[in-house]
Amino acid sequence: MPIIAIANGKGGVGKSTVAINLTGALARKTEAVFLIDVDPQGTVSDWFKSRQEQLPNRLTHTNLQITSLPWSAQDLTAKLSEEAQKFTFIIIDCGPANDKITRTVFALSDFAIIPVTPSPYDIHSVRKTIDMIHEGKSSAGIEVKPFLLISRKIVGTSLGCEAREALAVFNVPILKTEICQRIALCEAGIVGQTIYEYASDSQANDEFESLGKEILKWQKQSSPH
Image (cartoon, rainbow, N blue to C red; front, side):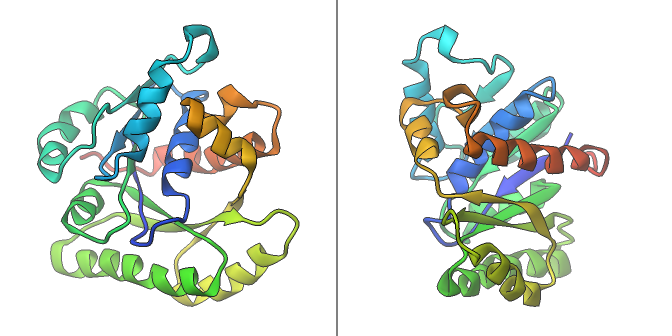
């Protein structure tokens, strides 16, 4: 039962989009998935409110549970171990700050996906999140395994390849899948659907299906909490 943090101290890199649609991709392949919002801005929680306004026949993920309000660090500590037994995967969407709650999430997670957009500034800024994980490993024995994910790539450009070369300096694995910036993802988010529910035949859905296949391999690697 892997617990996966979606984290990056910088905003605007697509964390919530990744969290929501990876959750949808995993829900299609596993028994039950729990999406937890710990971002004080409540992006996932707002998406869930829009989702509740949809007609049931528009929502195909019946094995998907979502928090209706953002959890605090105290909520995570008190509730996560009990909830973990009920789900095949737990995805935690972190806010745009390397703060106390992010440290708590890392301490409780098996894996961390760090979305990063292929721009020089964003690539440079990801170091703070990676350093937080390394510091946690050395000072508190945190065992979370980080992976970088190229996110919000502009379609039809070679920025993904250039970003991979630049990110290699961090010595952190980079997921093979790259998530592009697509209108369908924005539209799906507005109406409270995953990309599979909104546009299952889209390239955006294909990308998240690919990401889901990569993440499913982690199931055997996760350690019990």
